[in-house]
Length: 87
Image: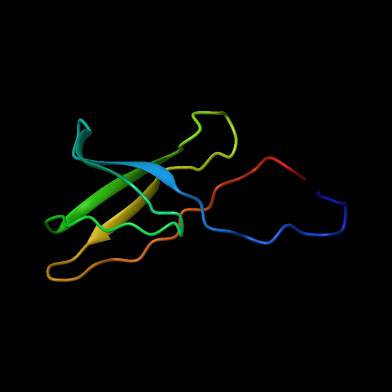
């Protein structure tokens, strides 16, 4: 139950993630985060866009694409906030 003045705590979300690169953009990887919201994809160095979608296929919650730069030999941590639309 959501009540005014009582914020909802953030919680992890499993999501479908499409990773694109280039101009024109092309899909370079697709994955699904686990129930804790974690995922790992090995990519060559470069700049990518992670396009998240909720697994239910519904309008909410929704997240905006996130740009990420991958450097050689390292994994990069990103946080993708989903908006429930509840105010």
